[in-house]
Image (cartoon, rainbow, N blue to C red):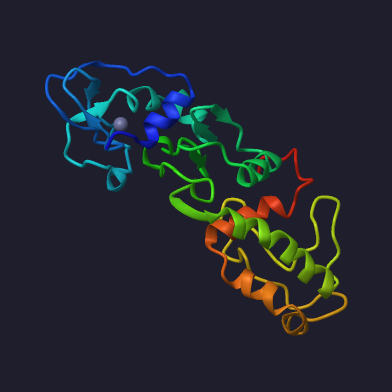
Length: 241
Ligand SMILES: [Zn+2]
């Protein structure tokens, strides 16, 4: 593997590889990238509190690549908690408005999207490297969520049509939509459940009136309903939770 999430993230942040020249070839235990003889590396080591062994790309390898090494410190864990990382640099991905913008217009690939849901969560080395702006993954906490960009964008007006027909009023922050709950960190079990009724029509009536919009809603991935949390609330621009 010549490209890894850590390499994309570290390069976007302007972090140079750290370590000593490798005496032989190997693989990075964390991100799985190939380490060639002479590449900078450090010895693999984790503290007793390390809980993410299951995510290691090359379990049993004694090597950490030069890209992963600068990402392991406490301050690097904080600065890689939430962001979009690509050769163009780092784009903010914490405020709802920023997330909405990045989901609508991801950077040119390769890019990595990270959204931590806990403090000191290891994010950078185990995310997917995205090679397409049309189908990509966001690392949300411990999950890799799939998003089809066109589908996500089409779902916004579909939600608004259903919400408006049902008589669910828009608010200062959100456009009309039929969801009872959308969770930004996916910690609410009610995430993506629909309301039973609005002021004008019940959901069954909306279903008869707008079958294509419902078909689209029912086809959405978990990642796409997560993305709707931000796209349906375009004016919630200042909050980070
Ligand atoms: Zn690595």
